[in-house]
Image (cartoon, rainbow, N blue to C red):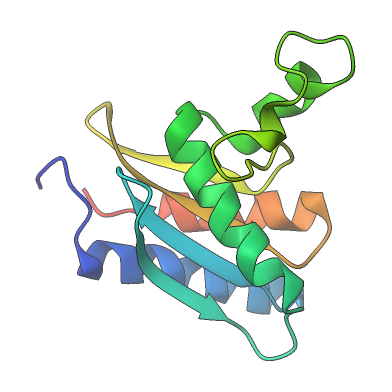
Length: 135
């Protein structure tokens, strides 16, 4: 496998996220982006709220830009914290759980972003999606 994210890889990740969302009974929006933050695959499950289309995509992009899970940013963006105001940069970053980087052999190849449930549900679906990355 190469240190890039193919469309086939993105579909495997996407499908795993959808399968887990179905298993927990929470319709989700799932976005998969490449290492440049460009959308490779996306799905909005029946019943997933429309506002979360943008949020899922922004979670994935934020995760790529910061090379961190979005959940790791939460304590850093609180008033008085080192990265307070970060959400206002780069077109609007998201600093709560549901975005997780995709790596292969230690190299960032993209990220997944999930939104439409609770933060705990979003993270759970994103973790299932990341676990399915081939290679």
